[in-house]
Image (cartoon, rainbow, N blue to C red; front, side):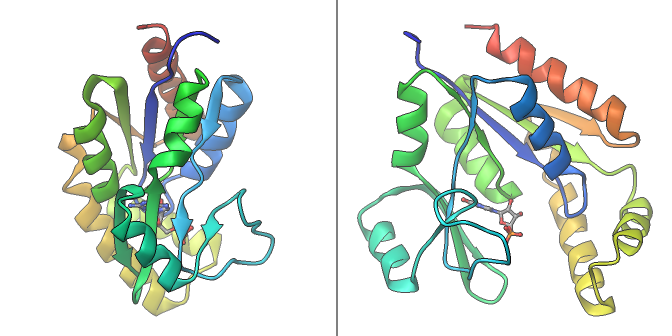
Length: 191
Ligand code: 5GP
């Protein structure tokens, strides 16, 4: 792999089907690698350090901010910090891989500003807030308060859609995936 890779960002407001879409991309594109973010939130059941996230103590995260180790970072959910490590992305790009970032909107907009044309940013949009609400209810993982918080956040996130290279409406997951796959494929072949 002689050539340097490029960055792909997949953003979807809560419940937008992002995890499924990302999983399928990794299956279809073996030259695509996941950028493992750093976070101060504790691991959930089944999450592995270095695979899902680099789980860091608050002080260690702050030290990395000081060292300018992050391409971007954000703080949300009651003080939890999340950030994209420069070393994590560079290592993979320099090995010729494409790197997939699963981050939230503001981080995505910042990364797009850094990489410009070397980055493809995709926004997966639910057909409507009402539909998103129905999906979250069907998933059954939220209580009423977190449900309304997630919906509020989703509404805010939707206002960023026009800052992305492409907006893909996730009405039907198969159709949405076909569009995501085409966009990624075209971007990879642009080299
Ligand atoms: P979770 O705690 O559910 O894994 O992630 C919460 C949110 O943080 C998700 O929207 C996820 O995409 C976002 N996130 C994960 N890593 C990063 C990162 O490195 N930077 C930013 N800005 N957001 C991230």
